Every structure is written in structure tokens, then in C-alpha cells.
Amino acid sequence: MANIDDLKYNFDQGARANRYQVRFLLPKVFGEGDAGKNMGLRVESCSLPGREIKTKEWSEYGAVRQLPTGEISDGGTTDMTFICTQDFADRHIIQAWNGLIYTASEGTSIHPKIEWYDDYIGSVEIHQLRSDHKGNSRRDDEKRIALKYTLNEAYPVKFEAQDLSYAEEGILKFKVTFAFRTWSSEYVPAPERSLLNKGRVILDALLGGSNLLSRFGKEGKMRKTLTNLDTRTTQIQNIFGGG
Image: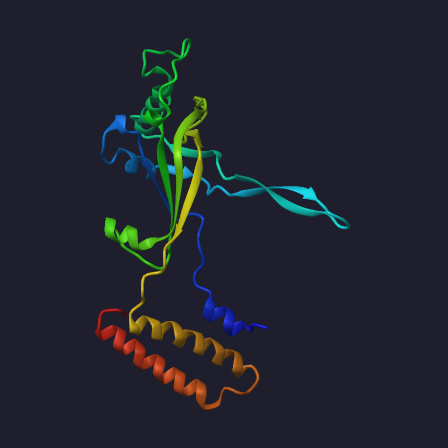
């Protein structure tokens, strides 16, 4: 059975639901640029879709078993909520993308003409970010990624009405439903720590264990040794600008 020291040593700061970024790879007709990336900055909420293997009950005799039918459900729809800027830039792009599906060939909402599938699909990347790596540059953003989620063959099928009221003073938001065919994920290994930082993690775990030992009168020389080592480590960090 794992004790508290094992748990502390093997657990980091934990993944946080509010640390993420979204990137939209728009259909080719929109050209190339940062429009999709900038849209992602204003996504207030989204979700990471799940996956289900469809099963059915079967039994040759005795107890019933659940056997896969061969159908895997990992597509469908997902909702995202955007915060509106004063020029409604994101809504403009979403509305144009949505309209592209049925108006590109001179269709209208009254008489839609559905465009070729490959001409209106894009993809959406959702990056869950690490909380133990800081930085402001694009290169730093890449180092912060812990999990990459990609919604393949995605396009907006719905955007909801927005209510206006003199009684409301908050920022307008709008909710979009994206359809997608399937999703894929990539788990990104944590950036390697320096030897000094690795030592810091181990030392913190040992000091925590020493605190536990002190409750049972077994601290002895270990606590003194670790404390001296901790002081020396802090001095080294200060010398190299890490303190």
C-alpha cells in the first residue's frame, strides 16, 4: 500500500481545467493566417470529447457478456462559448464559416445549396497546458502543452441567439456548436528538468517524509542532514539566478 510520501513524490501540481488554449484551422477558402489562433484566445469554455465502444449483450450459456459491435462513437458535436469583442470578429468568422456550407454555390438560407464537404471542413485543436512551466513566447506555449486534442473534419453547425437587455452590463458571449467526425489526442511528455530542479523535487519529498517521521520521534540526524542540504541547495539556486 502506498504511503503519504509515495503520493507526494509521485503527484505534481495537478492538471487544471482553466489552463488551456484553442486553435482553429479554418477551411482553405479563408486562406492562411492567425485568424484561427486569435479566435482561440477568446474561447471562454469548451470540452474534451470522450469515446465509447458500442456493445451488445451476448451469451453462449450462463452469464451475459458485453461484446463490442464494431461501432466506435467518438464523433458528434461539441459546444464552445466565445467572449465577444466590440467588432464581433469571432462571430463574423463563425457566421461566414457556417454560411459557407450552404451559400458558396449561390445558395441562401431559404434555398440552400450544400457545398462540397472538403470545402467547408476544418479542424479544432484544444491544448491542455501544464501549470509548472511559465513563459510568454510561442515557443514557451509549445513547451507548456501537456495534451493535444484535435477535432477532425470540424465545422460550425449552430450558433445560438444572443439576448440584449438594458439591465445587463456584462460582456456579450455567444455559444457555437461544432460538428466533427472524430478526434485524436497526443500526450506530450513533460520538459526535462535540469539536474538541480530534479534534486529540488526529490529533496522536497524527503523533507516531507522527515516531517512525518518527527511525529513518531524518529527524525534524528536525518532531519538535520536534509535541512543543511536544503540550505545549500537554496544557496546554489541563488547563485545561478533561480532563487
